[in-house]
View 1 (cartoon, helix red, strand yellow):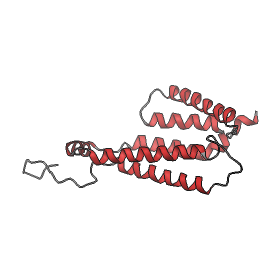
View 2 (cartoon, one colour):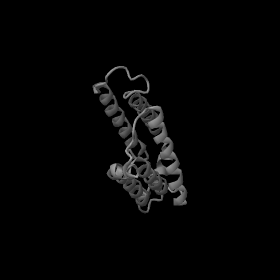
View 3 (cartoon, helix red, strand yellow):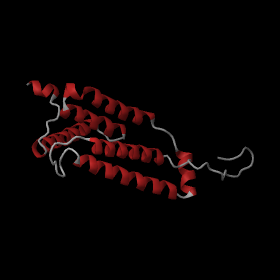
View 4 (cartoon, helix red, strand yellow):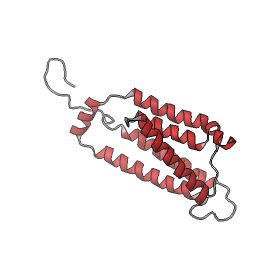
Length: 170
């Protein structure tokens, strides 16, 4: 940014400019805290082992804290020139944001009705399309394959039944 008529660049950047990833790091930290509190307060009958009801919660909590720490360090170490370039180029892609948000809200709203397989397929397709992956039919196919593999893993390895939805009525 330049002062009118001066021809010089502005050198006094506010601390937060060019450090938007700190917001995501804060969200990941909050997620980690929620998972830790949930794991500590969870009533577990017997010993679930690593793959028990608490195992994945601990794994995701540790990963959340690790990624948040890494993002925070990267944001704080970002050179001033890179921050200025990023601040000048920043623009929110509202179409991508809304497409991803609709996918997440739709997944949450229709999980019981559609079931894991269909809801997860649509979630993957919406988010990947929102982030720019084309063609949409390929996104749906990949989403279906990933949802199927996860359903098999949860059902076969963990013995957990994911919602069947409309597929369970056939």
